[in-house]
Length: 581
Image 1 (cartoon, rainbow, N blue to C red):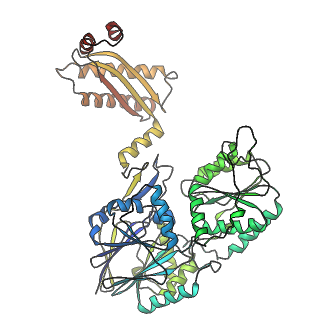
Image 2 (cartoon, rainbow, N blue to C red):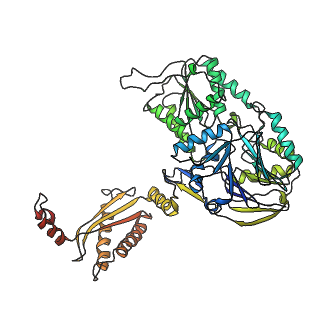
Image 3 (cartoon, rainbow, N blue to C red):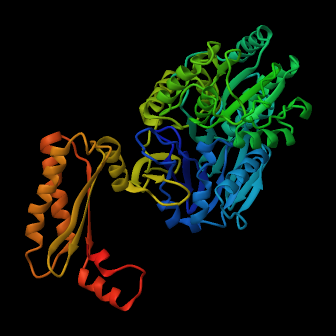
């Protein structure tokens, strides 16, 4: 009988950073490796990835990385995983791997040693006694796949994101046949997404969505501007189809989306004739180029905050391609994600200053891309797993999925809600509990460096954002133990020096009093000197202002005798007394 462990290194009790590990005996299978976008509290952080310590320590046991689809919360962290295992085998659909290559190119990752292998719903891979199969699922990206790992005690099924949208162009007959085979052979554990477990709304809104868009096209005789997330490939196709029907020219703004769209067109998943694309030129200062053609449809795309940022630039007239006018109609198809709520509201306010023709599509008006309650029930009833592990979602989503499973007869013992890092163990086809944990913290990436920013840096950034910084600079003669120059006090984000001269004077007074303690000995302990200044000044600032700015003492060791001797031996073009003065 097999010994099986399931570990979520990310993706449970959170939205994003999906990375799941299935261990069968001594073999490790990795399901997806994504990123998470930072919130407004993550000062300056560009992206959040998984702690890969466990995989680094066990990299010789890794059989491969199996990708479900091309969203960044499922493939965005691959470049970081490759730093730990450059010879990794990566399996995914043709489209998913094509997008992954672009992601790796953008991150300047060297994937020459990586083995990228294209799989289809008919692919079966053998790893000793273990077989890995795939099945097609409906999502808003082409070639989205679920993964089925067959062990001796049954299948471990990973659905990733899915739905049963009958309007999607997938081979449902083959998908249902695959699921029926898995169910017949026995499913030990179902790893199903839970993001839509709270959603009771039935599907079928694609027709309503298209009808609304068509009505807007038919009633508008001027330029239409849509904001879309770059991952909404199928929604982009729907809008383009309508634009082509109304003989409109199409412009896609957003570098990453342009590449994804062109990739999808080349592979036959998007059908947008080349002659329907508009050739935009940069707007010049003379106004000879405006890109204000009435038949133009502009798709403003990006990830997370990017569509809002570009719309703001257009509304303010600083964008290089599009300037909003009062004749434009703006359709906002980007419901705010976590951390972008304020920016989304601000963007709408800025747009309304330019044009009142703004149509905002809420989440309830857009076709849902995640499995709702009834679709989750359908997946569970088809597969009939022994155990259900909710993944891809925050705790409220996982708990909602527990309620859904209980409605169709599952008990608490069969529904396993893990936390990141928990080791869920199965032995002989039975769940034996959480047998340990592994490191599964967040790694905060700032810029391109693969290095955790760390709690200390984040705390400093938080203090800078909330209370500012005070810089105290002075020149100290280490031989005579005297203050030659200063202190100069500079504040940033705390208070204006001119507005609070009494406080600045008090800081200088504290500096002199504290300096007397550290300049009376035989040697100057510079480290303790700085700590003493920080403590005394911080205590005073908090007592007076109830704030805790960062205090940075800059003590410059300056021995004038040494400087003068150096000047005696060199002709620097100026007199000695200019330095000593």
